[in-house]
Length: 363
Ligand code: V47
Image (cartoon, rainbow, N blue to C red; front, side):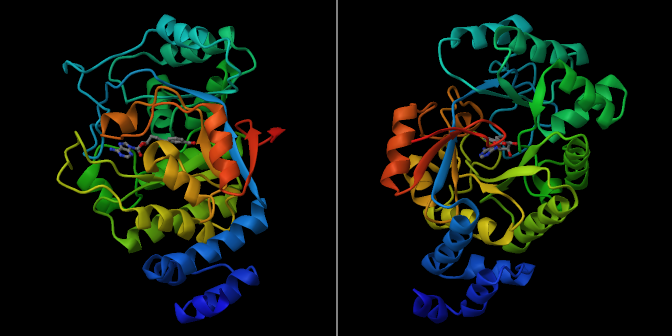
C-alpha cells in the first residue's frame, strides 16, 4: 500500500497524516488531483484513528414544512414562488400530524428545514417546534439551517443569539448543515445571490456553538465551483471549528441538476463523490464525523464511502424531498435492516446513534 502511495506522489502526505500534522490547502488540492485509491487509503487511516470501525446511523424523520422561498437559488429544484402550482406549506397542525403518523416507530430525531418563506410569522416556527415536542417529548429536533436562523432573527427583530435561545426553549436541539453551499462570493453571486453570505452562515453557526447548540456543515459540490473554491470552503470550516468545536459532522452534498436552472450540468461522478468524502476526512482534522448521505450519492456509493473516510450514513430519513425534486433516483426512505446490512457488508460495526452521537445500540 505504501508503495502505491509513494507511486502516487503522496508519500509526504502519508507521513503528515501518520504524524497528525495538519494538511495545508495546497496539500488538499493535491489530494483532489491524486489517485483515488491512494487518497482513500489516507482518508481511511484518519477515519479508523478517529472512529475505529464504527459506522453510525440514526432513526430519523425529515419534515420539509414549506418549499415557498424568496431566495430561489439556481441549484435548487425544491424552492418555489408562492404563486407556483408546486408550492406548498404545512400548517402547524399538518406538521403535528406528520409526527403523529409515525408515532409507533422508534424515531429519535426530526430533521426539519424549509425555504425562506415570505409570509410565515416568527410565531409559526416556535409553534412548529412546540407541536413536535407535544407529540414526541423526547425527540431531538434538528431544524432550520443557519440561513433560516438568520431569517428568523430578522423576523423577530432580535439578535441571532436571542433568537436561538428562544428557539431552544421551544424545542430546538441542534442545527443541520444546509445552506452552506460553497462559501466563495463568486459562487454565491452566480448561483444564490440572495442567500446569506458565507461569513454570515459561519457567524450563525459560531453563535449557536457559543450557546452550546451543536451544528453540522455541508458543501454543495459538482456544479461550477473550482477545486480551489472547495478547499477555501473547507479551510473556512476548519478555522471556525478551531474557534468553537461546535460542528459534529461534515456532509458533502452531490449536486443534482434536474429541474434546476443549472439543468445543463451533468451529475457528479462516482470518483468525485468518493474524493469529496476522502479529502474532507483528511483535511477536516477537527471534525469528529464525515457523513456519506446515501440520499444524494446512492446507497451503493455510501457503502463504499465507509472505506474512504466516511463513518456515518445518515439514517432512515423518510420522505426526502429536496434531492428528489432535483432528480435523485434513490429511495425516499431506508429500512433500518437495510442500513445494518450494508454497514456489516462493508466490514464496519453498525452503531445506532442519537443526533449528538451518543451510542444507542451497537450491532
Ligand atoms: O442546503 C439544494 C442542498 C441542502 C440541491 O445536517 C441540493 O445532517 C443537491 O443540508 N442537489 C439541504 N443538493 C440538505 C442538507 C442536509 C441533508 C441531510 C443531512 C444534513 C445534516 C443536511 O441540500 C441545501 C442545499 O445545499 N441542495 N438543492 C440539489 N439540486
